[in-house]
Image 1 (cartoon, helix red, strand yellow):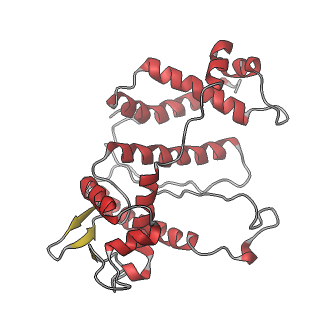
Image 2: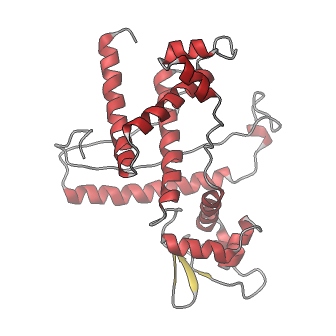
Image 3: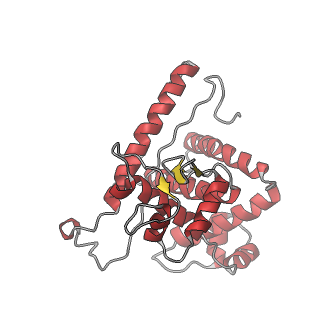
Length: 282
């Protein structure tokens, strides 16, 4: 990165990426000193994980050299417990229940849409909300899930005492903890894919976008609705495919059934703002 023009382009790109992140941080009273401490930790963790020599553990001095973090801080930060990066269990459960509701044949109507489910199971094999939750986990009471979803605005109860899904995804209208958990998960994986594509040239991740300017508000709203429909169709199909049992014929020698399990994230997003607004303005 000794090339000054290239460094300038990178810093400009990072400035654009950081601006909305800082907006969220300030909204939650995370100030610069707190952010600097967090950034130090991230620098140390990434250097230790991704910049080893011959896959050997790096010394505090080497990490300090390549990151610019003081050696005393490096030692202190390396001794801290690992940061849990997984979604809270209750959020993961909710996402699984919604995903099953929008893809499982027994939970769909004749148009392939998630149908309203009776709140309580009234007969054996009935497609009720209780049965839906039980199909994912026997450890969580369906009533607890329902109460939380009603609080978050994910579902409503209709006049027939049926549970109606308000969105074909676990998208809480309320609940800051849930929103922030997905904020980290989705934005983190998107950023990781983009970083891989910038730093390597072989086997790039699929990461594309379409963008136009000089559109009217009506055009944008039409595109927004269309993007939401196409996006949910794509994500639903991918979820259904991922839920299918692994085919032995699809296993490569490098990744047999007994190998480490993999995870994936595929996201779709849509954003619009005034054409005159710069990327860092809001």
